[in-house]
Structure formats: C-alpha cells, structure tokens
Length: 222
Image 1: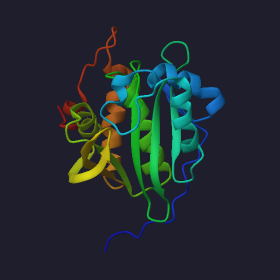
Image 2: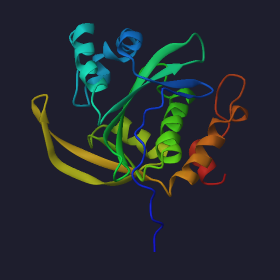
Image 3: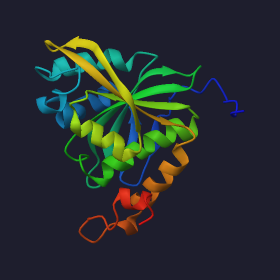
C-alpha cells in the first residue's frame, strides 16, 4: 500500500527562499515590476513560444502581471541574481495550485543572467525544494509546446519526466497549440535533489566558472 499523503498541503506563501547565487522573493508589484520589465518583459523573443506576451510596453506588461499576483490559485516568485549587484533576473509562476490534492504547475521566464547559468539551475532547485520538499506537494508539473525545444531540454535536464502530448489545447496568437506535459513527483525528488546539490556545489566549478562534471554525469555516477 502506498503511503497516505499529508493533505492538504500548505499554500506556497513564503516571502523569501534564499540561495547562494539567487534568492526567490514573492512578487511585490511596486518593488519588482520595473526590474522584471527590464529583465524579461521587454524581450519579445522570450514570449514567442509561450501563450502570454509579447508586450507593447511596460504598462502592458504590468497590466498582465498585476492580476496574476492577486489570484489565490497562482503564486509568483521573482528570481533575484546575487552573483553581482542584486538584480531582478527572472520570474517563476506557480499555477493551478491545488493544496487539497498536492499538485501544482510551474512556469518560468528566465532573463539572460539565468539562461545556461548555474544561477538558473539553483533557482529551479530552490523552487522545487520548497514545493516538493518543504510543503510536501505530490506533483510538480511542467507544460510547454512540443516545438519549444529549449523548454523541453530544460525540463528533462532538471529531472522531469515526459508524460505525453495533449493535442489542440489552446488557440492563441493566431494558431492552434498542443501541450507537452512533464511531471516530477514527491518520491522522485530526493534523488533529483541529490544530483542538483552535487552539481551546484562550488567545488564543481573551476576558477573561470566552468563545470567540472555535468549534471548528467553526476546522475549517472561518472
């Protein structure tokens, strides 16, 4: 018999999740919106493969962001890069939060300071550790378009497993969208966390910042 989960889970409301390279801060529109616009909102290419955006100007971006910050089934976390001066660098969206069932979907928009950087991996680690570890959610879900190769690669690198493709799930931006669904489950998290922790360790990086061992090699015991 499977273990009976401790439900309902708490709502993800922590104001800050601190890390070594980044902090996750619960979105505060007056404090974070302008920085998010500079980091991700004003770059149309970041929104080409996801349903929202692009945005005509900062006002339009904040107009999209503000009501989502007020919804009870959504929690938004700003990623603050600490590798230099503290800088807003990206955004996490926890969507469809269902504490009764212990399930939640995550979305992300990374700016240039996080893409293909250790800081971006640590940001994901902090979020997943909070949701699956601290709060005890049973399922963390990742959705993207089947043709969004960068998003699919990131999901698989972080440790998500693909479940399948739902056809014709949306009509937006003048076309039909399919949805690839990935998941990470609570009982899978400890092994995933162990690999991420080993990869993120300072001793895994040389003086110039290059990795000594890849995340794949660590997971494969090489």
